[in-house]
Length: 231
Image (cartoon, rainbow, N blue to C red; front, side, top):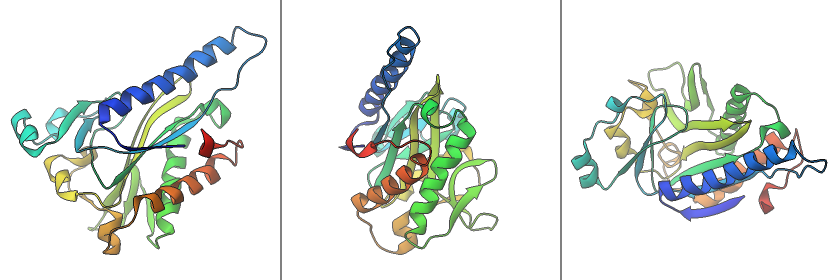
């Protein structure tokens, strides 16, 4: 597990890609050797300066600002190679990038996303919030099925040869008005919230990161004992 602090989106994306490609290259090499080397797993925690990212299946019209307005607001914009639509990253948000070789766990992307959701649901339960999934809408929500349904964690991943990158963005002390400049995840008519808004106070990011790591290890080490802390 690596705490990267606050890092620009593109810089972190390049670093992810380096780790991601390294695992893929090792898997390819292992097919041609009698002594295959184990592939590593990583979990990166990072905060990004304000940025909107558009996934491969996203629609540009879900970005409600033009280039000049983005510059005025000090918000960057990137088209990403992850799945999903448009989302926001910014200070006060925990972004988690698991870079895993799913051959160690289970080769099922649907199950992988549901497992990531379960990590966040369990983390929020530690703060006495009853979070859940919303059918057909990847991520973690509160008050699903009511007029007050609101998203607290967005997710979007990429996988190749069962190696993952990108991941989840959990709103902790996030500046929520920035979400008003997009149609979050392409979903109309539903709100966005944060842990601080729900609890009425700011929460230390490190405290939440520790809870996420605990539940992440609990979910994935049930399949294979890995030492993410020292990766």
